[in-house]
Length: 348
Ligand code: SF4
Image 1 (tube, protein in one colour):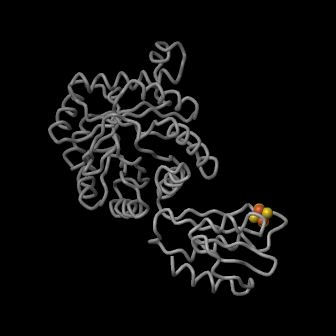
Image 2 (cartoon, rainbow, N blue to C red):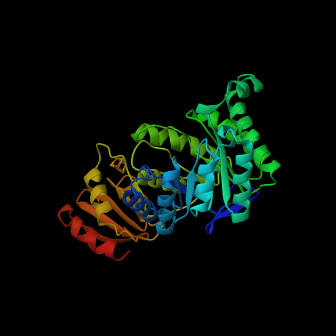
């Protein structure tokens, strides 16, 4: 979306004119290969396009190799501290690795990783995390944490560039929304590389979703971000669902249906809350991306909103009206609502 350069990971392009990608990270340890494969499959089904997998131990390299062969979408190995793990991940078929050259003490080893990645055409994602900003980086930026995050990325980019490596994705994340936005703003002005965005350690449930959505949305609205991850303390498929909801809300990218429903008030003629759940259960999995369904409680705003949808329902004093693409197709009593709904959903 925002970057001048793009990269390719096993056929997946990121950056440049590519769509904003949605990624996640599996939560299962690599030692449990069957569960890892199942989690990857569930993520792929949900539309995840890149999966990050931790490789904390060389003994798990064989599992990484098998997972690579079984996953229908590309894997990015998540590596810390030891350059040998990065080499093992590349040799296990990972077309991308996420490393932090700053926490790899062996400079020659890091250069070996970069050389191998270049020879394989692999992508290296580097990044800074708010939790690992050093005292020296903070001093360099006179205590400005956003600038320190960006500076930490500078240090890592320089290591790759010293080795003439350009197949790079960068990222700077912190658990502070404002800090992350500012850091990424600095990076996007400076570098042509694709930027991976998200708010790290955003939390769980509604609070986590809102924090992630707030940060990601502001950056996307500023034209920053080529691939997103919504970090949530919860199932990885939720991260992907929320990621697509964010992109859909910003009208950047559609996946699945778009459900409009009124908040209800004292005027409601039908049970909107119950009806929304019924409609969701009835909609087919293969519904065309961007199909709009409206569920509106009464005749105040209902008919107009419902008439603008692919399928709309509005409550009336006598029951309900069903609209298909702007045309009222049925006017009936509430008792017949579910039956009529099933008929109309089949025609979508
Ligand atoms: S559509 Fe009707 S029921 Fe729903 S919020 Fe508006 S006025 Fe209330």
